[in-house]
Amino acid sequence: MEHIVWDFDPILVSFMGLTVHWYGALFALAIATGFQVMKRIYTKEGLDVESLDNLLVYCVVGIIVGARLAHCVFYDPGYYFANPLKILAIWEGG
Image 1: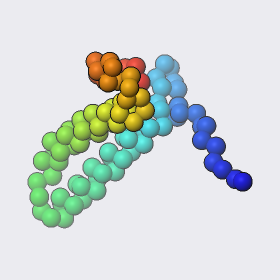
Image 2: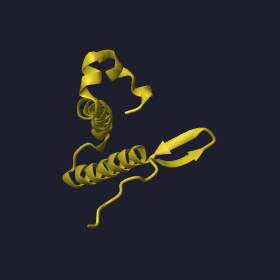
Image 3: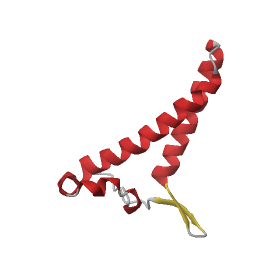
């Protein structure tokens, strides 16, 4: 029976102490693509494109907070419910 082996390296590139992970690069690509799509829609509809800056900030904050909460709830909820301050420890990964 054939199956998928999911064991690739999570690090996209490491250069001079800076490590870029695949998920970070894909998040950035998705945000940039979404911003460009919304910019095109705003221009086509005749809306103020400058208001997209605020929307971008809200979206980025929402994505970061949502990704962290999803990590805590789906991957190890028992640990994070026992140690709720560790939810804020984004420098520890996740």
